[in-house]
Image 1 (cartoon, rainbow, N blue to C red):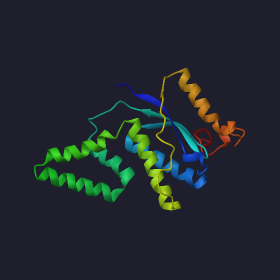
Image 2 (image 1 turned 180 degrees about the vertical axis):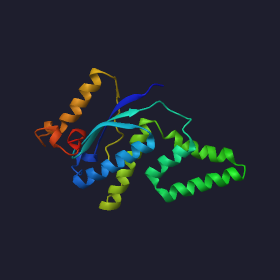
Image 3 (image 1 turned 90 degrees about the horizontal axis):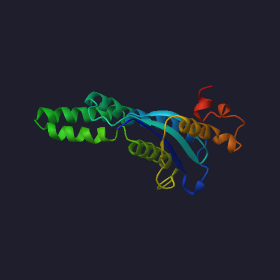
Length: 189
C-alpha cells in the first residue's frame, strides 16, 4: 500500500455552531495528539464554527513499528502514567513467558496507526469526551461518520487545499484565510 492523502470532513450534529475559540483550541491540541499517536501528518486544516476540514497524509501501514515507538505514541494520547502501566504490564507478561499475549495487546495499538479511520475516530471521540465532560452534553457530538475521500496528488490536491483554505472567506468570516487563526494559513502567520 502506498502512502495516501485524504480530505477529512465532519460536521457538528444538527449543524449547531458549537465550535467557539475554546473548542477550536482544544481541537487543535487533540488533532495533533491523535495525528502523532496514529503516525499520520496533518497537511492542512480549517476549523469552522460547525465543521472541520483536514488534509491528512497517511503512510503505508507498518506492522514493524517498534514497541518503544508504540509506547511513545501511547503516551502522547494517554499520558505518562497509563503508558508506564502498560509497559510494566507487557514486561511482566514477557517475564512470565506470555509473549504472545503482550504481542497481541501491542498489536491492537499498532493496528490503530497509519489508518485514516482510526485517526478520525480517535480525534472525534476525544473531542466528544472533552466537550461532554466540560459542557454537560450527553451523546454524540457529530453528524454521523466523517467523510474522507482519497485525494490524488497534483492538481486535485492543490484544488482541494484551495477549497479548504477558502472556507472562512466563503462563509464571510474573514476577507483572507491568512487572517483566520483557526486554519493552517492563518496559524502560519
